Image (cartoon, rainbow over all chains, first blue to last red; front, side):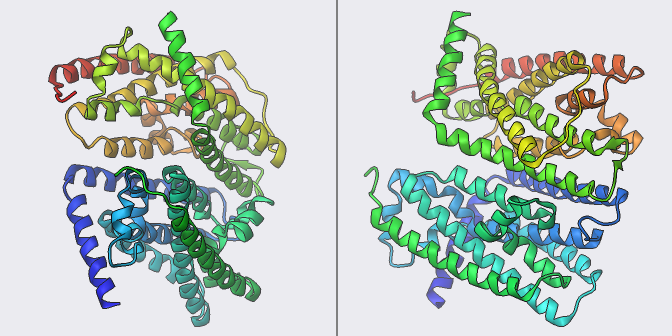
Length: 259
Length: 261
């Protein structure tokens, strides 16, 4: 474990050194991400200037959905940025060299490119989330459940990224798969109650966007039933096992390219 | 003209060679439209009007603007930045048509494919979720602004790619542009719902002409008091975009150097 942490930190340091080469690019990207965050936040604020509730949620609660979405999405981007660069490793044959190394390949292809740019954004997101959460009536058990479901969401995110890596090996297609994933989880910016059936059912029980993005906040405000809590942990376990099986199967089918 | 027709035909064929890419791209666009449609449907659950807009008008605005965005934003000029960086630009310079015409033709093909599927997706959303629509008004005026918007966006995208002549950091400015465009062009809601002064300032920028005005005119018709000013600004941005893009292109070509090919 200690060795793995050491390797992870080494990769993180390398990723930071690489990213910090383009200082103007970093600055402009950061501005872009802040602009995106502020504009979407303004949209929520703007809607609540004209209405008191959105599907039964107040402004603070709706803002909390958006902030928690941003937090989960940003943490996953910090950790799993290397997945976005995986295609080149497969098509160039560079993956061979990683598979030969005496450490788990996930250390390199899954968490080997920590994105320092997003790390800067997590702090303000955390502060804003804490501020919004403090304005919502909750209890200690509800808060505990929120934390557990938040961790559960990150676990599902990990599984989805492993699935993207596996599909990358099987099909050499990563860019669109990861962007589709980003668009799909984007549905979680707002409470899932706004979506009509069958869309809501699909993104709760088949592709569990609701479990990832909505359930933690619903638990915090006391609007999540016990059966759905159990369902959350069962489905995340199933997806994780499925992702690992898919990864193993993809590795068995992997044929090196190039030379 | 014959060269341009062949280029158009080749670009269309290219789409059928990379079918999965295109399908996934359209799926992403559909998801984005669905989020906005559902959001506004939820808002109108407890209201009959939002600002000046009824439920039908707002949902029509969202769907019409989604179609307009499909037409305006689909472009292949993004490839030009990497072509400049890796020297492929030389291949483009050797072609029998100018770079501006080359990308204009490729973009027409790109937009043809995208708008065709965009219509199908909108029909799917309207039929499946029973979205009420208003009858489009002042279609010709809207088409005029749409043509201006498409042209302005074409020149802006070219200029964003021309940045590649001077720096390898080409994606960051484009990312920032897309983020700004997604909001100030009126993707999420009609810009005339913003506070008056802010709306008037935005009308001085090129962004509302890309999406908001063509969609707004289809929903609410022409605003007689402002139409002349809007036409003047749309034309100014179109001509200004062309002049600026040409200047950047000339300066970029002057500074461009590459070897090893």
